[in-house]
Image (tube, rainbow, N blue to C red):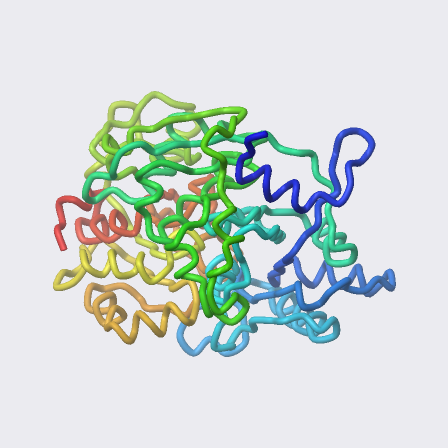
Length: 454
C-alpha cells in the first residue's frame, strides 16, 4: 500500500495500538529549555522516577537569557534566575547534555539541534515548545508537547498519541526574486486561515520547496504551528544529508541507502491537498493580531475583526506600505540563521536606518551563527546601519518582562507571532521576512524589500 513520509515514520515508531484508537509512539529525542526543563525534571526527582536514556535528552538555556553583550550568567526576566539555576542543577543531576548560557554552542533550541546533528531524518523529536515543528525540515517527525508529556517521554521513551491526518501543501513553480520561505508560509496561513492545518501533519512539497536551502526549509516548517498543524515536514534529499553529515551527533555520511527511503510514495494518498502557485507570491507583512492577518506588502488592509483593527491601529483600505514604524527586530527560531542575516545585511550594507527607528536589534539564533556572522563582517554591517548586535537567545520574540521595546512602539519583526502584546504590553507587531525588516528599518516605515536592491 502506498505510504506518505509521515506514515513511514509513524509506523516505524508505533510501539502498540491502544484501546480507544490511540497509539504508543517511541520517542527518539527530547529537548528541554529553561522555562520548562526544571519543572519536568523536578517532578521526576520528587516521584523517584529516572530517565530511561539520558543520552537522548538535551537541554538549552535560550528563552529568557539576557542577549546583551557581556551578559554574564543572567536574565532580565524578573524572578527568572531560578529558571536558569534550577534547570542547570537538575540537568547535572540527571546527566543530561546542557547547552548552558555561556557555552560555545548555546543558542535557540531549534537552531542548535540541527547545528549539532541531534535532529536526523526519520526520528521522532519532542520539546515543550510549540515551534519544535521547525525541525521537520529534516524529514523528522518533531512536535511540541507540554511539560508533563516531556516527563513521560523522558521516563518511558514513549508518548500516547492520536494519529493525525496527513496534508500535503505543494508550492508549484519557482519563487520570484525577493520572495522567501517566510513569505510562503505567511501566504499559506493568510489563504487558508490560522486553523487550516488543525489535526494534520503537513508535508511541504513542490518545486519551490525543493529549491529552498535547509535554513529556508526550517523557516517554512517553523510556522506550521501558526497554521495549527501538529507539525510540518519536508522529505530529506541530498541537500539535507550534506547539511547534517559529520555534525557532532550525526553520522559521518549518509551513504546508506536507508536514508533515501524516507519519502512519500509517488502514489501516496493524503487526507487533504493544497496547491499554491509560488510564482505568484510577493513579500508578505502581517497587519493585525494573527498570522492569518497577512497581505502582500503592496496591498491595502482588508476588512477584518474590529478588535484587530483597533489594536493595530490600521483601518480597512489603508495601504500597508508606508505605515510608520518605531522599532525593528531580526531574530527568533524563525529567522535568525546565517542565511537570514546575510540577506538582511546585504540590504543594509552602506545604508543607515531611519531616525524614526528608536530601537533595532539583531539577535543571532546561536553562538555558532554569531561567530560565523562576525567572521564574515556582518556584525559591522548591522552596527554601521544602526542595529544593536546581540548574543544568541529568544530575546524579544516574546515578552518575558525586563527588556522591552519603547512603550507604544510599532515593530517590524522577523518573528512568528503578532498576537496582542506578544512583544510587550501595547506593542504592535508586524511580522515579515528579515529582508522586509531591513528595508522597513531603512525607510522608517513598512517597505517592499524589492525597492532596496543589495
